[in-house]
Amino acid sequence: MDALQQRYIRLTFRKLTHPEISRAFEQKLADLAPEFLPVQQPLEILARLVQHLDDPAILHRLVQEYTIRYPIYQGTLPMIRDAMCWTIRQHLEFTPKIQQAWDALYVMMAEIMRDQAGIKR
View 1 (tube, one colour):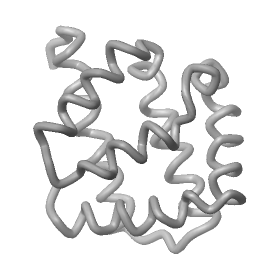
View 2 (cartoon, rainbow, N blue to C red):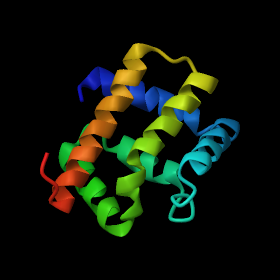
View 3 (cartoon, one colour):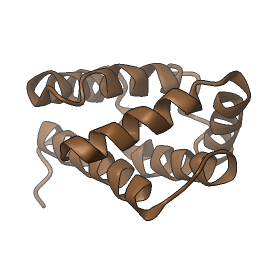
View 4 (cartoon, one colour):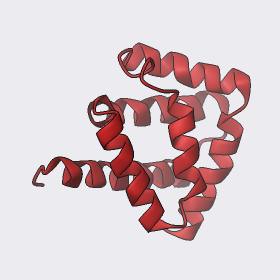
């Protein structure tokens, strides 16, 4: 994930924290993965990750911690990504570059989670 992608993620995430938009995201996620929401607020998890986008070591450690603490997170990662992209499309300006930035973050997270679980690619 390059610096421009990090910037796109930070800009869109900041807007996602608006109460109306965050409720829309959480509702969409509840529709896609109702088992995830009781575990922890997904925007809190994403906020910590977004805060450390420019520090791969901390980002890696955080994803590993979430993989251990919230095993259900591994199975719901594609649904979290889908809910995030849906929310951005519905409530914010959505461009291919924004999509690519969020995809890069989720691909990186999925790779860390697979490594943590010992799953071969």
